[in-house]
Image (cartoon, rainbow, N blue to C red; front, side):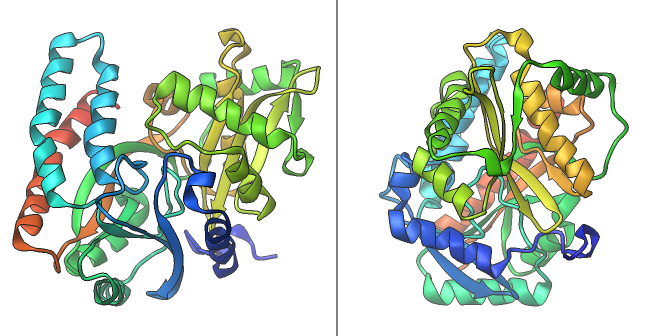
Length: 371
């Protein structure tokens, strides 16, 4: 077995990419992610295998996984709930987003081909050289000249050279959100020690990847729904039991969870390991249980311990900012790379205006309020 340090940062194993694409070819996007409309295919370009999604602008409303309009307007407005304690600021930000909404729609970026779209909130990107960035641009524009090319989930901590290569090839960097990453194993903070102490003493049984059975998949989806759709926002992806089953049985997601004394799952997480990078795209717990059960703390600790044990770069995605900072994660701005060089001039200009506004206004807000 190859040692973790010998693997690239992100590998995109061709066999795993093939498995992922086959799931969507066999079942269709909406049966797997109920609020998603897209076509998934495989492409080999720039020295890597990639899953690719293709969308038309008319497929709305659509999941933000394939829709910048959903991400930069609807989701952004929903996120202003974080400013509920500052109603004047909340109204100002919401008004600003609504004012910019016609610009986002005018850019037409929902008509897109998205490279490396694993249909997670965070899609770790393989290293892309300047030569390969040009190859990616030329290959995709030749096939899809009337669509924007999008690559999500880039950040300067993990992808600095890739960002430079894509910029040189004419891609525009559009800030999307602030995420939290743990590059190396860190000393356990007071909060991290408390999480692990809670886990050791909790009246729950740890469920390993091989311990999940067919009946668990519906419960996994239900626990995810409790947290991400009911507690947070219904704008998050609507993952179905079929999706959990297929992603687990095909070896794309590794599941870990906690069962109560009656054998019922009360918390789960799906871990996605790609090269030396680990993400945690599926998290859920029974939100009806007492807060002192600390289910979220324990399931996140299980993911972080996996990264520490394996020596992996842990991308903890966005959200729960204060929680993640107390557990050794560092904030970094995430970008989407967008190429619009083959689109009409007004779309090219609009895209650059949006990118400028996001850099000038969006990034300072994210940093100031530690979102």
